[in-house]
Image 1: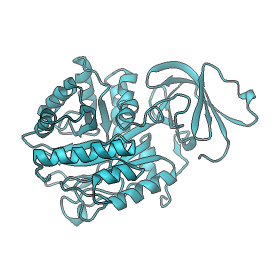
Image 2: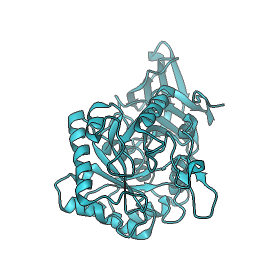
Image 3: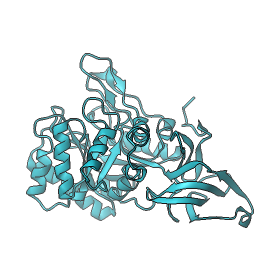
Image 4: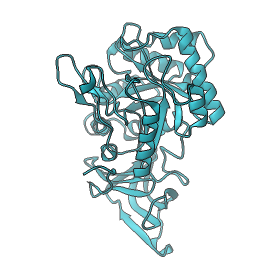
Length: 385
């Protein structure tokens, strides 16, 4: 629960829910949105912080469902392991809800470490979840089964990132993919969770082929699968469009330099009049970026915000269409909506206030607490300088 003044009133901001709401006032009480009205009189409250949002755009905080919060990498040896993420690396990107992934390294990394890091970030001021699992099958778990991890551990919303079509994968068979999907599905049902299977798709020849085979030869619901890195090359992107046509989800990776950038990919999807309700964007943040014969670097979460700004300011794509790929869409896939990804009474007070012209973050609230004020980080992580 947020400390300080109980009532916060955001006045005269142009609001997106992500639908265009026009100019509204938003009343925040503790960590929740309580009212969204044309005009709310601050005199009705004994003590209220009034936040002037004139000439600003107000929208839900971003949801990034793919971040290596406990570190990632390791493909080029121990020196290429990335460190744990810092709290403000997420908030500077407008991220108020994050899902942590383990990734390639399940030898020196663990689900217990991932869970501990998620709890630390939650204590520091944002909302956190994790996937059970890693690239390979059998996959990394905490309890011995992905099913029981999802059913019994509050923060586990699914299994991932399971790798396919990648030389680093375990080259899973159809049967093993169906088994892990069954674990996720059953665990989700028992735990009242989304029970998603978050799938890393590499540059391999098959692309989405293994997933299409699972879908063709089983009865799992399409919406439980979330293949990511779909914009890493053009062939995979076209396979992703096929999956969208069937009613499936696709996840694009921000900061893509070799394949299709997120702005280019969204422009193509909009031009082809594809429905974007099942398209999401994630950063793959804090993983290693190790091109051949080049020094390693760390993938940055801020790519999410940079690509969003490029979509609007450079490509001139519809604001609400782009916004929902980082707010409402992931919230619905993860069964967090409307507590997350919305500006409605009862939603968590995760709120971005953008400058209307430059789309820079003027202010950020996480569960009602100020994280960024006047473009400056006012809340840092425990060990941040």
